[in-house]
Amino acid sequence: WSRPVRLLDVGACGTLFEEHSHIEDTPIDLCPQEGNPRVMQCDFLTLNLGPPGSDMVVAPSDEFEGGRAERLPAGSYDAVALSLVLSYLPSPKLRGAMIRKARRMLPTPDPPIVPTSDENGEGKTPRLSRGLLLIADTFSIDGRHSNRKGGYVKQWIESIESEGFVFLRHQVLARSHVLAFATAAWSDEQAEAA
Image 1 (cartoon, rainbow, N blue to C red):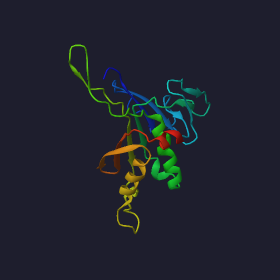
Image 2: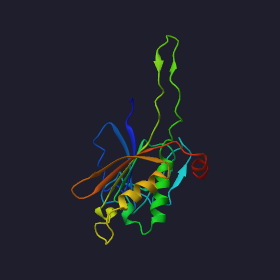
Image 3: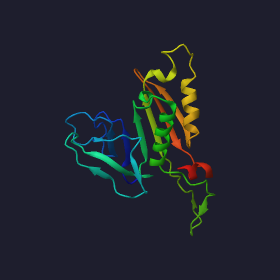
């Protein structure tokens, strides 16, 4: 990997990744912490997406030091982190809309290709370009605070996979859950909808 990983940090409570030279982060938040000049104010659900490779559009703001992100380029991030945002949305419909928008920010892997050989007969296997979706959220996603016994994490995984992702891992931390997904090749219907 010859360049830093491009990360879109949605729900950024600061600039947690700026000290890591191998990560080029774009931190956005609905209501950024005061005094942080890098976190841009942005409602991710209403954010305009430009074509891949287009420029980011950030408007100056008297209220938010980092400005307001008005447009980000689709398909231009290697990873999207949704930090404590999904469980705060009031409906499954809005959570689905956020997952779909995150999917549009990530690359779609090419269909599998049969390995080829170069002029020296050396085997070459093309590298698939996959994006990574990381979701960090509260324990409420597993139903511990309801009368329902489990099943929420499984429902979240199935719903997210239906939006063009492949489930990788679920990790329970001290005060939260983390789910990891990779982008999958889209069906014709999914590509047309996007």
